[in-house]
Amino acid sequence: MVGATAGGLETAASIRREAARLFAVHGYEATSLREIAASVGIKVGSLYNHISSKEELLLDVMGGIMDDLLAQLDQALSGVIDPVDRLIALMDCHIRFHAERAQETFIGNSELRSLPPEARATITAKRAEYRGRIETLIREAHQSTESPLLNVRLHAFSIIAIGTHVSGWYRPDGGMSLPQITSTYTKIVLRSLAVIGADARVDAVLGTD
Image 1: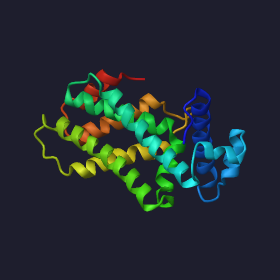
Image 2: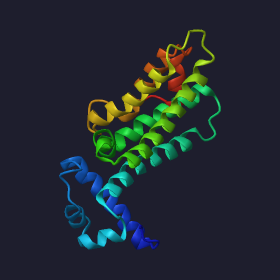
Image 3: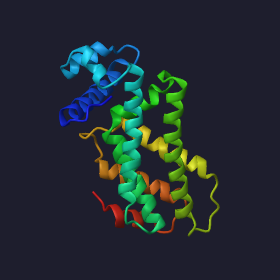
């Protein structure tokens, strides 16, 4: 159980952060609670003031990143009314989040199998909620076009895959800046939906780098 004090919350955050780092480097199965405790700078017994098991810690890491992603999407869409602008805001949030939280994204993609069935269902439900929100934004942005929407589910999966893909190769010192990457992928998505003036719409909302 996470402590209610500021110190307890800070320690819990450190445990989650170091667990994510070690899970990403060594894998969930190969990482021990003793290693996590040592990395945080506490005794292994003190971990149990914050967690009940390593499985719970993995669920906390994987569930936490989905909660953060959903919260950031809410923030990105707040006050944005136009359907196309909302899809652009989604893309900006989605790509930036995955680029900046690559370590946790990797864990989410590689360690779902390590969760017990009930915990796995919890993460799957959060992912379904996020995908459903993307599908809604796709439908709304596409309503102003005259072309048929081939398959909204596959469109949503392709957007999700862009985030996962970027998290695997993006580096801050790479050949393209994150704003450039976000702008380009967003134009690709809007073009695929036959949004009129797609590139200009993206440039107006995101600007150019």
